[in-house]
Length: 75
Image 1 (cartoon, rainbow, N blue to C red):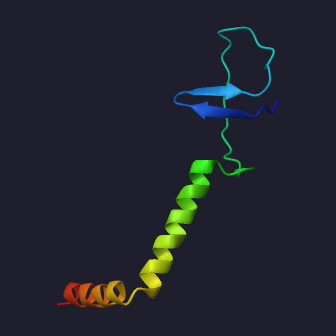
Image 2 (image 1 turned 90 degrees about the horizontal axis):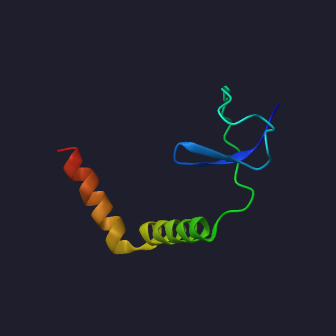
């Protein structure tokens, strides 16, 4: 039997009724599925990360700092 669900802490909330009695002992094999639709928070985090990446790659001041920082690590 294969069922899908969502992890909430130490509980897995199943999408369907497993038709098992309460207290039944089961063995669970986990397979992480790719996100079907990114949540609004995930999308905003991805946009923020992309923006920071663009700033990092194209901002002369940040680029100069990065070069100095790398040189300091190799001294």
